[in-house]
Image 1: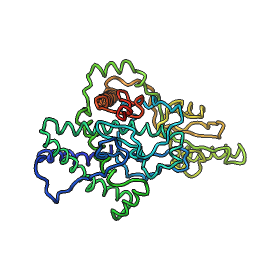
Image 2: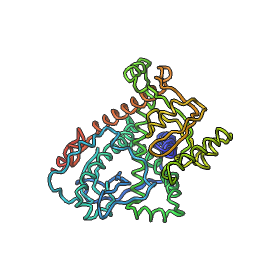
Image 3: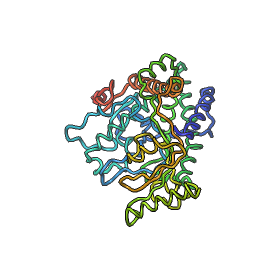
Image 4: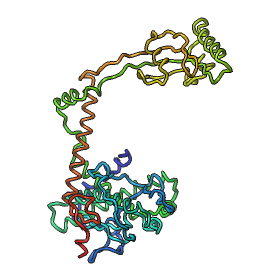
Amino acid sequence: MTREMKNLIAQFVIGLVLASSCAIAQQDANRYQPYQPTVVGGLPPGSKGLEQPVYVADRVLPQTTSSIDVTDGIAPEYLSASNLGFDESKIIPATTKMNRFEAGELVAVIGEEPVLVGNLFPANKITPQILNHPQFEMQLRKLLMEVVTRKALAQRFIDDKVSGKPLKERGDARKQMKTQTAKIFHQKWVPMQMQRMNCDTTLEFEQKLAEAGKDLPTMQIDFSENTWAQEHVREKVPETPIVELSELNDYYADNIDEFKRPARVRFQMLSADFSKFPSKEEAFKAIADMGNQILLGGAPFDAVAKRQSTGLGASDGGLFDWTIQGELKSKEIDKAIFANPVGGLSQIIENSDGFHIVKVLQREPGYTQTFAQAQAEIRKSLVDKKASKMRNDFIKRVREETAIWTKWPEDIPGSRDISELQQ
């Protein structure tokens, strides 16, 4: 999560506390009101409209003649399916010729919220070429998996905040929460994106969004959902779970090879590459002259390297930073830098590329880190792994506890076939 997004979410949480405290207050006529969506065609009978449509950005179908291009930097952060408990490898490939999807076709209902094809791809980008592309259904299903998780978390966040309140107060609190998030979107997030896109006016910004198949209302709803989803995970899952000392000891004992550190060396090198000279003899004269300037004339190694060396690193004074034993392509040079005394010049070394002289600056022998040395690194690794598992488990549980109907129930464990709603 970027620092800017964290700041926006922090402002949202502060505003949420204030909003909750006045949830039952009468709203002033001039008070900022959140976007009220229009009715979208293709919804189930009795639906009042798509309250929280989804916009999924930065998606391009491979090898299509009409790609879904979007402009970088204008999409909010998303909770990715790959790290939220979904196994994308379990998406079942289409085995028969699929029906032609239209933008208004219903593909899922999450809680009481419908999701249409046009909510997953910009409706004005759903061309016949894309609809008939063999990868379209797979892309659609992958995006739907991400949307299911995000919507389930966002819905749970709002439900938790209004839980236990009388019915009317719950409705007022929901409105206040949406209003507070909408303010952050328009007052903070939109100006930030306009600056990134070098837009001087809102009209110019909206035009660029339209060119990418986007619009502010759907992006506002998307921003709200994403903010609520991330905040719900942050509230319910500790960022730094406790790791016991015994866990650290067990990990160190079971993974001792991770803490072996090979020998390494920092060195400088002069080179006379055969490819840079008319003959092998001329290359030898050149490397010998460079060595004599340093050994007999007292010239600085890096000055000679910059002036005359023809090998890698010459412009940096022939410097090679920490190099692990066995890492170099040249076995001759590798042997020399781990055998030559620190600070002294080596003899002239010949390999397939040319003649070389090395000077060892620092050398460390191989060793195994002690538990005390490795403890901080182990703790960080285990904290990260434990936090990730706790997040995944929590998100999976929220998803499983949410009523979900989808066109592809095999993709999402616990979901039901959407045909049940259409009978």
